Image (cartoon, rainbow, N blue to C red; front, side, top):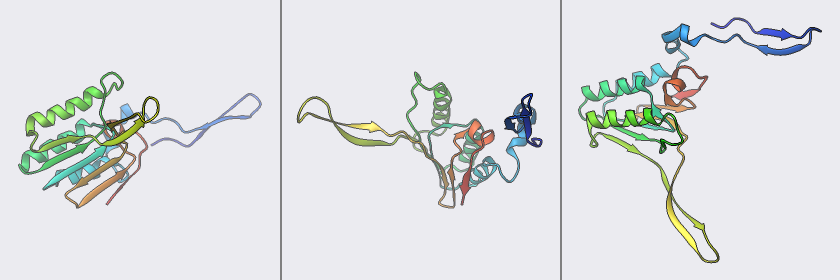
Length: 178
């Protein structure tokens, strides 16, 4: 637990900054996962009880700790389906793309495309491209930024916590679970 706020002052006693001591997350380790205010236990419990489907919509899908719970439940329930809507990740612009690809292939290889669907949102768009009356029409990717989990129409979590280990454990995020 962080200590009381610390005030740093200059030589004349003027306030330079008001800061709270940092929490050593490496030292605390798994303690960050526990407790009534953590996001992960609620999501993990809901996934561990899934019967029909797990729907995830998030800008990231690279959380090995959540994937392990999903895989365990899918092994127990042979009819359980996983639908993931996420943004397209470019290996050239996103250093986390390897984790997303690993999540994708790990699930697809074990459960197949009949039980696991990875989707992206697209929109049909038109744009004047060159001169008068010249319009280009095409499908364009939508940058998915939502953070939602639905399990069997019985549990829903929506908020700011991404489906990656950092978003579920270390960052100050807020979700509502119903």
